[in-house]
Image (cartoon, rainbow, N blue to C red; front, side, top):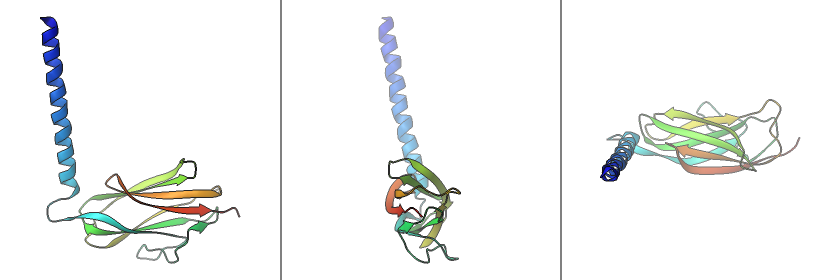
Length: 148
């Protein structure tokens, strides 16, 4: 008799947990794209050593020197009062070198800038920058750092 009550209580807890997760998912998706806005999508990812006042790379390159500042200009389209745009910079072995995010409120086409630099220089090798919108990976770009 005691085990029946225990099983019933466990079943109720599991059912409540499932409903709770569903509600969280629905809430998250409804705040991601508010009514009247369009989902934010990444149009392009450009890498370079310099950016202009519009946060766009002035000369696209994919090979850098260890002490360069590496800029990523992320062009987006769509409209949202609070989209989360993020980048993760990784080394060839998968090690995360840096990551950051910004809350953006685009109303159409927009550019957002991220950059990475290391005071003692980045080790030579292959790298990748991965771009995320609202925590979902959407694009990536490979680049190389050469010695000297």
